[in-house]
Length: 293
Image (cartoon, rainbow, N blue to C red; front, side, top):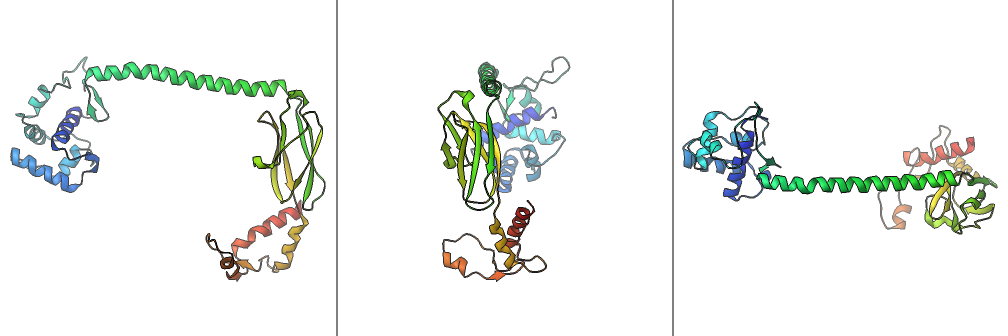
């Protein structure tokens, strides 16, 4: 950042306060043109819209404004020149310390007095400490809870066995949750909590019926925690019904024309049917996958 930048930031703040034109982030070319006229009326120096936009950081420009521009900015606020503006500025001490520039207390693009900066620091550090401690305790609690379940109950068992490949499909679950000594034991068919069934805490087998084909991850749940998962793959010979719709080249017939959502059954029934439309090819892939398995 260039040496003049802290003072330019302060100058902008003073101008915005005097003009009362609202947030400068919303200023347009019209506003900068009006400001150019105001500066000219007071200083008889014409600053272009692009120059003022550079001062406000709306146009990328690495160098600081030249001396004539800086003097015009200072004179607009009633100072003799830019040097006087810097010298009489109560917010920023331009004197360098240890060979480095002291840019003064600038926060969020606006000057703040040293007391405000100290006050913010006073409350900021304790807040960071409290937040850090809370996060650390939460992580320790979570890790400890998982470690207790992992170490104290390694005997938990859960395995699914299908009876047939037809629908509906009865799946037998072999389980052992006795080591938990809990009266809250459930088996859940998949991710959906509504497919959860309470089972005997000391039992060994439970049968659950799946009415739809697909891949599922059954869960053994104890005291509200998932302690074991088991994969369930429900296939069905019903996929063979697609064969009658397949063309020799693999395209599928009678595919409904793609459409958006609409609360009208007849609208969907009346849609045009196509052969080989990509909307209908996914079931063919599912069929092939099921048959290969």
